[in-house]
Image 1 (cartoon, rainbow, N blue to C red):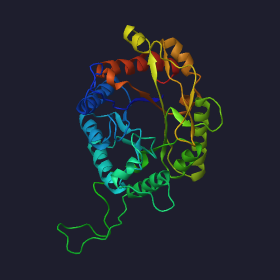
Image 2 (image 1 turned 135 degrees about the vertical axis):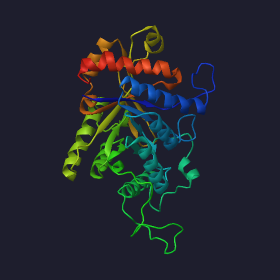
Image 3 (image 1 turned 90 degrees about the horizontal axis):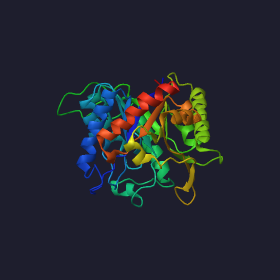
Image 4 (image 1 turned 30 degrees about the vertical axis):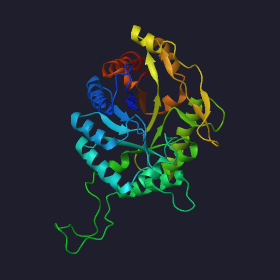
Length: 340
């Protein structure tokens, strides 16, 4: 068995060709898609976070709304850029969203990716400490968040409070027990995957990573996952970690699919640069008839290593079409691979 969910970037554009023309459309359709995916039997509804872009950007309001409208599907992010975050405020928002959902939050976080503006985190009043890079700042914010989610008191109470306090130092409220074990790190390199394992975070690996060996993407990603699991075992954590990968996968089962994606499958990986120093490898997408997809996906070593697969969806094509995309994978592809 493999958990299968969707990952939406929540794009919107005021164009007649788009089914998602405003921020309100993106948010409300995201909720509707999660509700419909749950009814279909999908395991997860995940959302990407980007700032200064016509995409989803304020995750906790959306996660809380999805949590209130659904009952069983996992809800999560993939990922929140920790360069922008105040860990204390984030811990409160995450605790509230998790309690509303009944403990279904799977919070994916990361050091972030190239953004729409230069050093956008500065506009959020975030500043690296002396000697830090922005990536260092993101990891520092992450470690603070993880400590806060343990639920231990740290703040000295006022001796004359407005309302009675429990004894001892105070923690942030609302606190959601168990959320600390449902934090995921979006790792772009083998080293950050190992770092995440040491801190006891689950692993999210997407369709790009640092090109560290020159091998095909899925092989490098599979090696990253194995390095993560080895580091997890060495760290001595008691629970079993979770690992997700994301893919663009489209089963061509009708004329709409062929019109949209019949000519879009990439047979090979792509190489690019995230910045002047970081050479990255981008994994291929998949689009074919179900029987062909099954054979192709059997060869993807990273999917085989992961326990969770996130299907990136073309949200601007509308809720109904995206449910069709998810349903085709769940019913016509997943069983042939032993995932269902």
